Amino acid sequence: MNLGTHKAVFQWVLKGLAGEGLLSLNNLGVDATTPEANAALYPNRRRLSTKIAKALTRRRGELIERSLAHPKRALIHAAAFNLSLILRQMSPLGTARQPADLFAALYFAFLRLTQAAQVALLVLGSRGPLPRPARERNRCRCSHRGNAPLSTGC
Image (cartoon, rainbow, N blue to C red; front, side, top):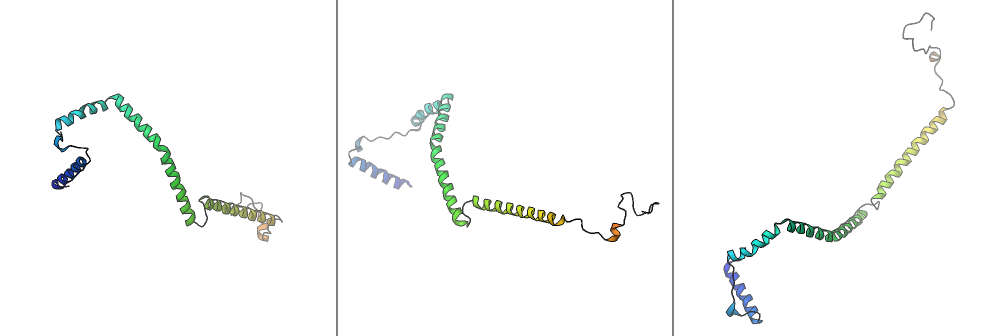
């Protein structure tokens, strides 16, 4: 705001206060000297730098934070609830746990199916060993025999 506008607004405020009888324009005085204004600030600054003042400031901050904890918690709960509603509308499966439950059910069904297939193969294979060719039946299955024939002829 430029100086002319500032003066005009200040005069308008003073006239409004005088019109209401709250201010007499004859005895208006403004004291804005820098040393006098700063003299009032120095004791406050000195008081705030003591250990007691710092402890009180810290305690006041803790109390304010504690008093704001409940509204923050309620706000977070409301946001989470709204987010869950949005996700339920976007997902055809409903809640977030339902897809996880569906995946687990499909996984366990697959495990049961593979176990049943293994059991069926064992039952079908229990009729006896599969027949081997005649050449395999007459061969020596000793571990010491390599490719060289032994003196016993096996």
